[in-house]
Length: 89
Image (cartoon, rainbow, N blue to C red; front, side, top):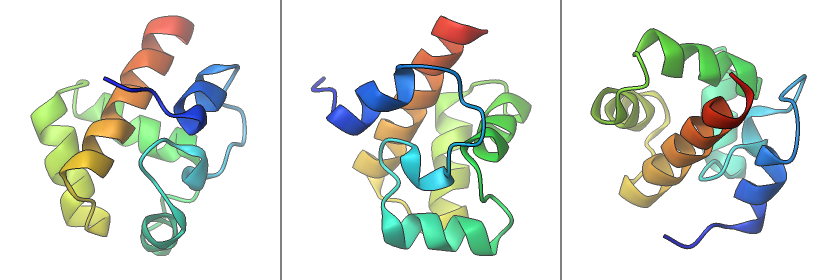
């Protein structure tokens, strides 16, 4: 798996108030759709990730339904959150 610079930047430190668009796989268009649904910060998406018990299939399906993420986008976002949790939780 090739890790993007955005992915590496996200993993570089605490989440704090990072915007949802800072997540790997979430660009401007998907970020706007998530914000419209109340997922305006990365930590709010992390909460959904944790509610779904870090289950890849469930999270990726949720992301597809929530903002129309394609397979690559949902895989990148899942991987980013999984690695962040491994490093910081």
